[in-house]
Image (cartoon, rainbow over all chains, first blue to last red; front, side):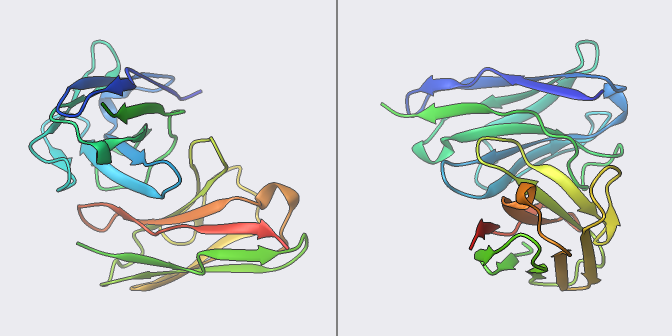
Length: 121
Length: 107
């Protein structure tokens, strides 16, 4: 069974940094693209970032470009999202999600349970 | 960027009703569209990909149709477990984008 387990969320001050992790199991992690999608409280879904299976291609929403970095470690079956210069508008539940193939421009299935990031002073 | 517009934003329906949710893309996305179901406090779940392909294990009362810029998610006979929020998502090009969501609530 495919499982994705996010961690690393919490309360951080504006301008601060945080690193999210997503531990993957139940599939060959290195063969599939992965993504982060967020959902602000009471709002809809917003794609944040994706990384190809090899890690050689990364993609970002304009709202996080230059502040967030996606990466993966296939030896640890873990996806990361390094977030810096955090703003109040980054407050959201962050989900990691698996793509069906190596390329990142695809649908998401499954999703992790999410981790809450709160940016507030 | 490709904008995805869902309608209606809220839909009131009863068990057994046929429900239709629309999703419009601001430019052609061929059939590169997925539909998700999300319940409060839970992660979204994939229902349909490639506009009309039903994910294995998803009840057959769910169906998707459309191509180009106009898409539809249909629930043929609404069941109690189907009250939730539904999102469309295009994966034709980056940035990947979602519709604003349609909440299906009990009438």
